[in-house]
Amino acid sequence: MIENVKLEVLQNIQLFSSLTEQELQQIADKIRIEEFGKNEIVLREEDTNEFMYIILDGQVKVVQATEDGKEILLAIHKTHDFFGEVSLLDGMTAPATVQASEDSFIAFISKKDFYALLSAQSKVLEKLLEILCARLRDSWKRIYLLTFKHASDRVKTLFLSLSFENGTRTPEGIVIDLKLTHQEIADMTGLTRESVTRVLDKLQKDGEITVLKNRRICLSQKFIKARME
Image 1 (spheres, rainbow, N blue to C red):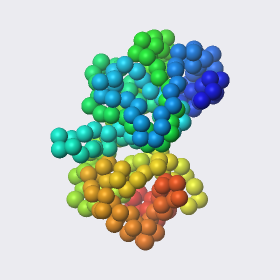
Image 2: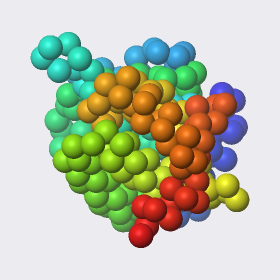
Image 3: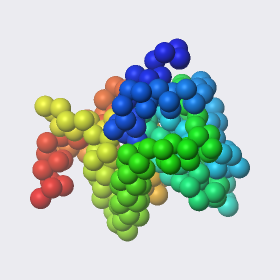
């Protein structure tokens, strides 16, 4: 990624959305950018408290290995998302690995520069607190969906939750702006891939969702109306 596009990209990052062009330039001067291929490891657990990461382009997934060797999908981050700030704040490593789910450009901000930024820019600190609160509420929603016994209820609740933060309204409904495989949906809902496939087939047959060619999911007006009632 060419250096002179950093400023333009940073303007689209929620954390920096309230900064002036001059303030953004100060951040741009302190970041470094690396390219990661699909399935390449971006971040291992032991490195999680050294940098904050910003996805300039691409998508990554955060996974955690269980004792029996299975993987739990904790989160998916897309273009303009950032992660790693919590570990910088408390100094603890996160028990998870971040892996590129497609070719991605990632910007790195060191712990030293991160703290200097928070000290110098109260607007960034306020925005960070706002974002962390939103993420906490999202975590509560994810825990809540695991209380459902029926697979269809878990998948529907997940889609509704994802649509709030990653949804784009269209005439056909709300498109979840994430590339989701059946396995990733299974990992987020605690279901098997086979169960997810059956649920998605039923939802499509009933006209509640449409799985688009780019693996994004469109929630129909019928789906939205049923969930809001």
